[in-house]
Image (cartoon, rainbow, N blue to C red; front, side, top):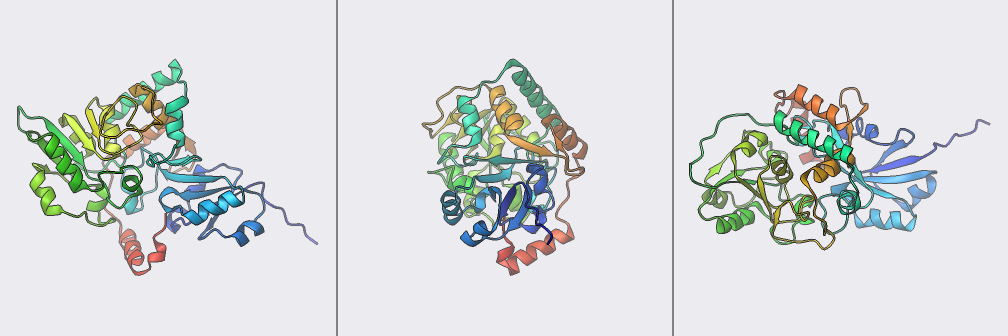
Length: 357
């Protein structure tokens, strides 16, 4: 009788969209067997040998998954896009260049600690790492890179003698707002707060690219947003905008981190990962964040130590410097959704079960 060889370790990945299946294993350990499943159950756990960990796209975690992992003593990891993602949008099914795997929580969930927060709270950064971080920061700014690297580089005319304030829109249904902002929950509420705080400022509002691309629901209060903002911009790159503004006000957008890289004043109304370390002006506070960090310490944690980078073409692990090289080589190539992407979105609307991580 032929013996059955069990894998050395199994990684259960729960509820991932099928389009993500080809690239996800590249971000995991090479000795793990990846098994994509729709649901976690006691029966499946008991029938599967050598489960090393359970991985869930961070926004798809449920109380049932958490309870089962605790009951069976299974490590539960959350996965999410990294901060240098791609040239193009995830809603257009563009594979990511970087992902994060977090064993404690996830960076946008301020209700509990994450691996990134733990790094910033406790890690010691040596001179070599900080020099590397400073180089990475300068390269990102000089190259005009951001998370998605979409939009055109075009000139904008702003009034002289006024403070130019950028307010980046966010996807209001995202867990980053639900879990990272206990007070302000909508882009309209944010704009109202900014207008109250800066009545004489020239406010530029940029809707989130996922909303503009049609992959996320349209935000509420559009007519009121039009009345509060002096200018609404759409097809323009974040790097171009950041070069022209004086301040950025945000709930928890990654654009705040990108503004810090460029030496801009940043005001937060939620609790993004970069708030609470002495680099931003914050409306809220977090008792776990008591240290004062430098910008290069923040860069070292968020862009060097925390993410995993994989070349989307070769599938090999790379370092952050190589990731920047790749993004620079792809700049200007971003396109709208392909026909296959439009068809996939139609299927998602017809069959809601396809809407997974």
